[in-house]
Length: 312
Image (cartoon, rainbow, N blue to C red; front, side, top):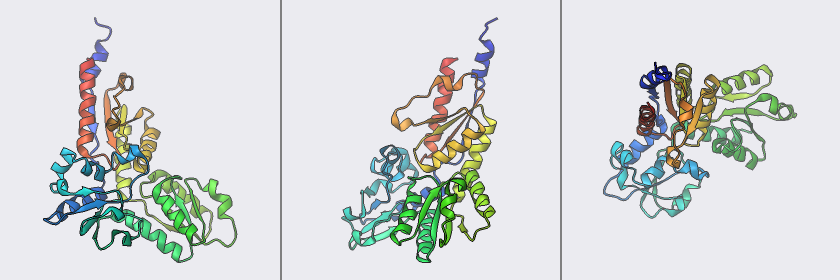
């Protein structure tokens, strides 16, 4: 009897489960609205870009710029859109804002008509931060330092002479929260780790302080992480397609806590799947962050299947 026969059997019966949630609702809506806005009049598009090159290459507007074949097939009309880097680069009469919106003054677009397709959850988070600062609140931002949503809100508070603090554990912020004379409000990072956010709110409430809590964590984060958690519990290995954004980091934390065999993988960086990840695995889940479209999730799932079949 072949001593490897049982292993080969497990390879042949490998089950690959691909997440159903890919582009978030806000991205899908923005892409549809930008595509629909294409007419005989020229249309340019831009929004708030990630400062990280590895994240920017996953940005849907960057895929529009590169004329990604499956993107323009999914959203006909995007092939007519010219992507620019900032509002001040506009040369047409109409400028579309993608799902990330912008923090640049609209006057920089000159006389161009701005079509604002910012994700409603991101717009709500930014607007809530502005409104709370204008109302005299100091801000607690649940999330990771460096996250652009948290940093924007912190900067808005500091520009008004108030305080903004960022963190994911109340114990780390406790000393600052005890400073007399502060009027605290709390916002959650749009793509935050949902389980940690729930614990954070509970810990704030336990302080028995008058803190105004506004839940700005989007519904996609709840749904995406719930599906990721279920797949991580069900499968032997989780492959997280890595778009290098905040939602992917939250997904990694969620999946890895349930399944240590969770690995990040960036096919756009030319990375290859590591066969060692699949040792003796019977099932593999493929999940992604908000900038990962469904066709890439499906392709990674197919690559996993081809890898194991080749080994067998």
